[in-house]
Length: 156
Length: 103
Image 1 (cartoon, each protein chain N blue to C red):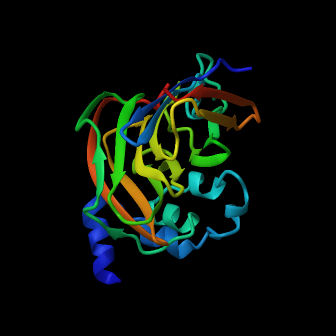
Image 2 (cartoon, each protein chain N blue to C red; image 1 turned 30 degrees about the horizontal axis):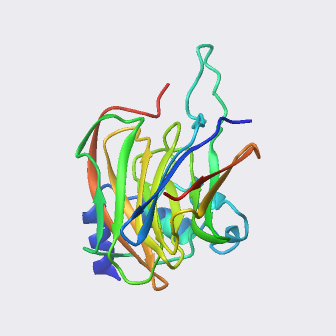
Image 3 (cartoon, chains in turn cyan, yellow; image 1 turned 90 degrees about the horizontal axis):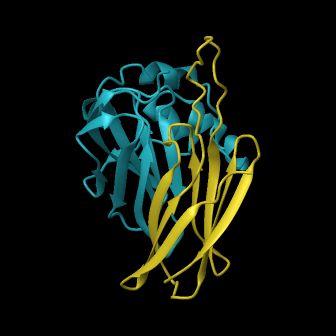
């Protein structure tokens, strides 16, 4: 567990507060799932809490998840992302922008017969690691990538 | 009522590739107007796509999705002439459903 946490820290950078947030235990996974829109997951501010709010735990880094995006986004208001999962039985794909006010940007449920491939555009407030979180076969996997933003898309 | 979505569904090999452009402000709730008041959040929360009665994609979105959201995905099991139906619901409860025929 400890070593995987290290990887989380190294892989995504700057998640030092996550231990505290988890310890605070503010989230009750499962409860929010009943609603159509997972409010808890969208209001959390750390990677671990999002995973928890989605009902998972201990995500593992995976090389089978590919994030395609510009390395430098000139306009943070519209940053295109394509996420591909090569993991068998991919059930959902979530896109997380670590330094946005709320870290979870979007979550896609992938039913059987649909490619584990989504393409969308999101806002980024500032340069930030971007995490693709994939649920496959009941487990959570992730990949991360840093995207530089020249002009933020969240300020007024 | 919001403007219609632009939906394009085309065959790509044995799969259907769907591209959707929705018309929505996707206000984050973080911005302030000129008098310093916070502009309340207004964004699409749920998106569902079906083809022949089967759900082919469902999504939950936060306000971080860009204004006038774009979405593309691919699924198996559709053929030319079938209809792809996409609907969304925003945090005000507004809804919009549009469909396109696979070509």
